Length: 37
Image 1 (cartoon, helix red, strand yellow):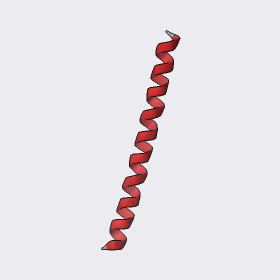
Image 2: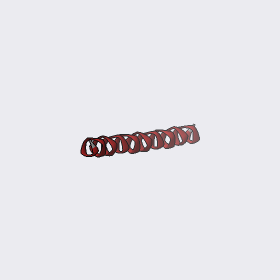
Image 3: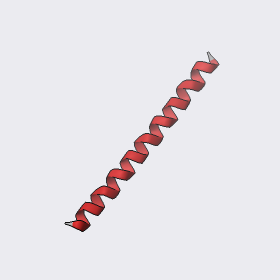
Image 4: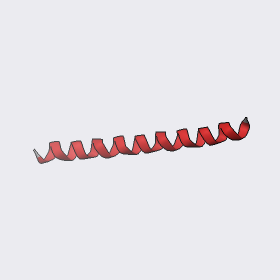
């Protein structure tokens, strides 16, 4: 049971990191796009 919980927590933190990275990348791309236009 504890192992399962640890796995879930790990997956959640990974997903959070991926979302954050994706969000930051999109923000930067939008800013760059605005400046290039």
